[in-house]
Length: 487
Image (cartoon, rainbow, N blue to C red):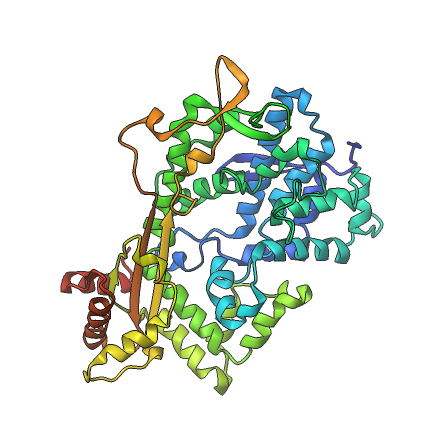
């Protein structure tokens, strides 16, 4: 890699300590497209429940770039036969840095809740937008030296604007659309470097540096314990050929067999964070209310339409909340009123929840549940419409839906660090969980002080659907206490 006249920059990170980044990464950070991430909360509505969860996508992205560099450098040092080049290292770091450029306001709220309702035909994914934003970043920015364009600076560091940038995009987005059945779907690197695609976003085992950073960072800001040790993972990682016959080349990241408990800790940490924080019922209802406000705002079409024009999308951040809250337009009165309810902690009320069985959760995503619940009023007053209910279907798992994710992880043993093996659950322990997925259906009422009547509708709906329900006075009082600011 060519020597740079621009020195590296050191960032003091609360999770990883002092991070030293390559000059090209610093150039990318110093652009409007990347600086935008300072204004997007990492955990969206969770910040309204956990006051410490005020961190943003900006610092998480820098942390992922750091860990991506640590992992690829460890593999390079440990296994020179892998022929990891300087360009490979730099591309992996850039992918880690830019993997979240495409997140919208309040992170997953935008692509998981707002866009499916605002414009379901678009099938928006923030990973695809991250790749578009990276292209826009390269096209629209000049360097600090003699107004050199960013693509020229990329060439300065021996990166190919075609193959290397394709490689970076592929690491961010995963398998290209329409190539899922191809023997090797990627163009940026050949199959022998398959393992490089597993560092930033691992679609095969689910173990990647993105998770490692946000586990550590989120636990720190949430005030929770992180049981997964990413430093041990880095120390015991190798690349092995996982092809069954040994003749083909399927080079994948493997971890030492004694680290199997660390892998279970990783996936349990993911589940625990979802259960205790990411899917907290108060955080979720606040995100539902923010989504409702965005949908009712008179410029909601321009919000959803911005995904078609990256120049507009660059300006879209969490600040949209304040714009609606302080808007004087009459058309925004309904949207503004919803946000004012959040500000005064007058939230939609939880009327009950249910946990469907494995057989029931197959049909639970289908149908208009809000309308069905409203029609269960049975003459009770006040009368309800589907607009008075919000159904929140929460899926919590270990990262592979109902499967045991560790069964997708490759290991190697001390006496043969070239052979990849799988470790079954029975080999590990007889007290590991049997199920790896849980679904909860929560029903909220938007109508002020109507939760008792709404609860009767919910109970009748559950009886009709043969669902066990929880709507006790104790549960409701606990919910009321939480909505006033408790955790």
